[in-house]
Length: 608
Image: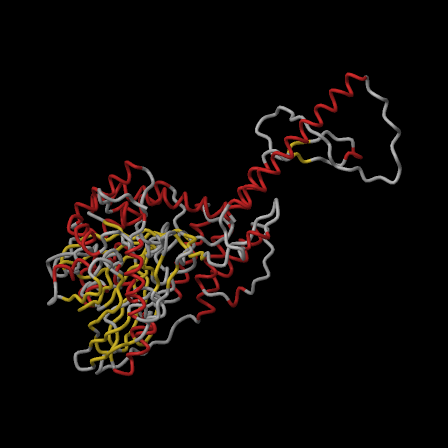
C-alpha cells in the first residue's frame, strides 16, 4: 500500500484532467493550488465519426516552437514514468505481495499480515503486523523472551473495551484470548485460579456450579480478567473495593526476570504495585481471585431528585450493598438503582409494575416519529423492535450537537425511567450489568468522598456543579451522568488507592455518544466532547482531587498540557517506584506504548 500510494501521490500532482473537446471547454487541472492556468498538452484522441477540416498550417517558426514544446513535455512524461517504475520495483516486498498487482491511480488492498485493531468505542485504531495470540504459557514465555532479545514491542491487550485504547500499540501487541481456562477452584476458600485471557462472563458461568461468583462487576461482561484488573476497573457499592482488590495472587511473564509469581505474602511491595500495573511490568498470565457465595439480588429502580438525595444519601450508601445514581442533564431527575441480596426470610418483593416495557418506551418512540418528520428523514426501521438505548442513539444521530434537541431527548428519557420504576430479581452477574448504549466518548473521574460513617457530601456537590456548568455553557450533554462508589484499594496505582479501609471514593462519568458512522459528524462530536471534558477538568479536578480512570484517561498532544498531566500523576501515584519496577522487569520497554511512555517518561528511553 505504501508503494502504490507514493506512486499515486507523485503522479497526481502533475496529471491534468481534460473535458471532452467536442464541448469546446477550457481544460482544467485536476489538482490546483493557485488560480494560474497550467500549460497543457492534449494527448487525448478525439472520438468522432467525421474528420475535422485540416488546420491552417502555422508559420514555420510557430511550428518549430510547437514541436519543441511537445518534445519537452513528452520528455518530462517519460522521466516521470521511469521514476515511478523505478520506485515501484525498488522496495523489497515479497514476490507474493498484493502490491505487485497494484495499478496506477488505484489503492492497493492491505497486505494479509496487516491487522487493524479498533477499540470497542471506535475512538482509537492502529494497524500492526505483530499481533500474537499464544495458546500455552510456554508459548507466551517464548514470545516475551524473543521479543525482549529483539527489542520488539508486544503491548498486552485484552478485549479492546477501554475507551482510550490503552492497550493499543502500532509496533506490536500480544493478546491472551486463547489462554482462557479455569485452572483451579477451591470451593471451601471460595477462590479460583484462571488464565488471564478468560472473559468475565466465561468465568462466572464456569464457577456458578461451585456456588461462587465474583464480588462485584463492571457494567459489561466482555472484559478479559487480565485487562479488567490491570486498569483498575470497578463496580459500585461503598462497601466494596475496585475489582483489583479481589486479586490475591498473580503470575507475570516479564521480559527482565522471566515468569514470576507475586502475592501479598510473596513480594508484597511489587504485588500491590503490579496489581493495577497497566500491563507495564509483565504480561499477566494467571490470576487467583477471591470470590464470594453466589446470591440472588433484588434490584430496585426509582426516580428521585437531588434535594431528596441529599437528605437520604448517607442512608443509601450504608444500607445498600450496591447503589448508583443516574443524573439526567437539563432535568431534576435522578434515577437511583440499588441492589441487595434477596431476604432469606421475606423472599423477593411482590411488585406489579405500573407500566409494561412497551408503555415505558412509548414516549421515546413518539419523540422519534416526531423528530423524523421534523428532520425529514426517510427511515423504515421498525422502532417497535428497538431497545431504549438503540432508540436514544437514533434520536441523537439526527442532531447530536443541538442543545435543544438533546434536552428534549433527556426529558423523554426521564419519562422512560419514571415508567420503569420497580423491582427485578436475578443472580448478581445478571443484575449488576448496565446497558451503556452505543459507541461513545467518556471521561470518568474518581475522587475521595469521606468515609462510610461520615460521607463528606462532596460527591453530591461535584454533581451539582457539573449540572450547573452544563446549563450555563449550554453543552449538548446527553444522559446519563453516572455516579458510583467503591471502598478503597490497597493497589498503589488504583485511583481509589488508600491506606485506610474506611475511605470511600466516588466515580463520576460524563459521556457523549457517537451514534453515526459519518466521519464529519463524529469529528464534531469529538471536538464538543473534549471541550466538555476540558471545562470539567479546569473547574473541578484539582478542587476535588479527581483523577481519571486508567481506561478512560486521554493523553494530551500539547506539550504544556502533557507536562501538567505528568505533574498531577506524580502528586497522586508512586511514579518513581512504578518506573523503577518497569526498568527492572521490562528493561527494553517492549510492553509499553506511547500512552504509557508519555504519562510515565523515563529519561533514558525515547517514547515510541
